[in-house]
Every structure is written in structure tokens, then in C-alpha cells.
Length: 106
Image (cartoon, rainbow, N blue to C red; front, side, top):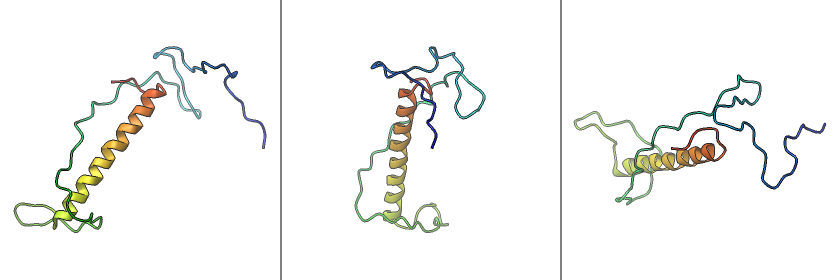
């Protein structure tokens, strides 16, 4: 394996690529762009207060009678947990993108 090109000189304060938010930067040969705008503000994360039962990740078809819905409480609770997990994970991704300066902070 050949030695890769390294950007940085080991300074304890780090290395900056793009000194301002309007500097154009790219990776992997794509067109250089300035810093992305802040992401859409996150809605309040859901809180699950009735988490009784075992999650049922094999969701059946929605019921077709009025009102429409899931077949069991366990399926509904499972869906809430999946949504909550997605909210947490997207917030973590957003924080890392902001930390690295790829998007502006809210």
C-alpha cells in the first residue's frame, strides 16, 4: 500500500479546511460548495408512557375498519419505539454534521 496524502501538520489546535462558511469545499471529486444551511428544526421527541408488553416487530396489515390502525397494542408500541429511535439517531447525525461544520448549527 502506498502512503496516503495527509492534510495537517500535527499541530495541537487541529487543521481547518475552509476558513469561512462561504469557502467552497468538496470531497471525493464532487463540485465544491459552501457550508450547508442549518437543518429543519427538530420536532419535540415523542415520549412513550404506556410501554407495556413485548415489542412486536412483525407488524401486520393495518386494520381496514373505522378507525384505521394497527392490529394490536404491542404493534402500536413497537412503532412508537421505532419512531423514537429514529428521532434520536437523526439528532445524533445532525449533531455530528454540525460539529464538523458540514451544516450550520440551529
